View 1 (cartoon, rainbow, N blue to C red):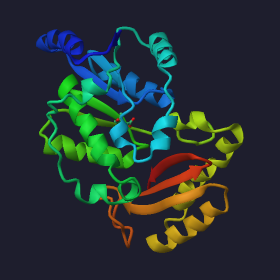
View 2 (cartoon, rainbow, N blue to C red; view 1 turned 60 degrees about the vertical axis):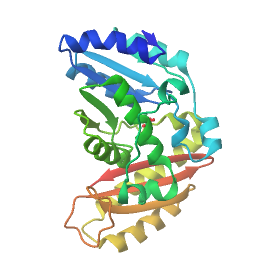
View 3 (cartoon, rainbow, N blue to C red; view 1 turned 180 degrees about the horizontal axis):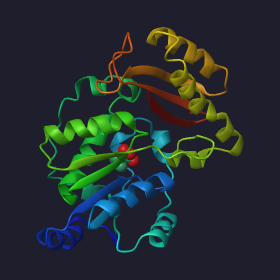
View 4 (cartoon, helix red, strand yellow; view 1 turned 90 degrees about the horizontal axis):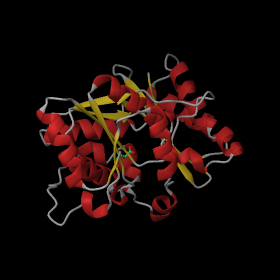
Length: 277
Ligand code: PAF
């Protein structure tokens, strides 16, 4: 069922919440793929009702071209959802529904989370994510919300904001879904040609190179070697960092659970991926 206004969504949900039904929430920007479907499947298993939102949030794009080219495929998304799931609530609001004049949002300081990795390269991005997810949480009031680990730092930011705003919502992070080749599924992959999809595999190969060579080098040496490995491919690297998986700060030894995060351009398409090791 397609719902476009906050008031009609609230009407549907408040009855269910009164019956103590658990609400699972999967926020998306549409152009749904297997990765989203696996989040929705999990949400179905763990809750009585599932809300999926589709909203291409302009405040989290620091690049106008990226926003303009972000795929918008509502018809196809609806078809995909109705084939796989029944009784889903699809929330498809416009800008004014999410950002009303009387916006309840009060910004918070994200500290290191806003200045490392994605934060460093996409100024304002996480402020936009926090703003939209905050407002969506206020509207949907779910018991659980589901996010993909591909956006590793986003999950950390969302956990942080959930605590700071005191939302009693369980944040569920789900493993990255990959094509058979290893390429992480992403709505942006729709903009890649077959050749580019092949070239993009260097990201996954580099992540594996890092994991396999952990025993052989200290983090900074491994990072340099991984950058060289990556640069043997065709993509343009934006960053490759090996950081503490919890604080996202740089590490100088292996006493931490580490994550390697990569952002790179494949033609005009910006891709990200990560691997915990
Ligand atoms: O991961 C995304 O698709 C977006 O950042 C999100 C969480 C839906 C907020 O716009």
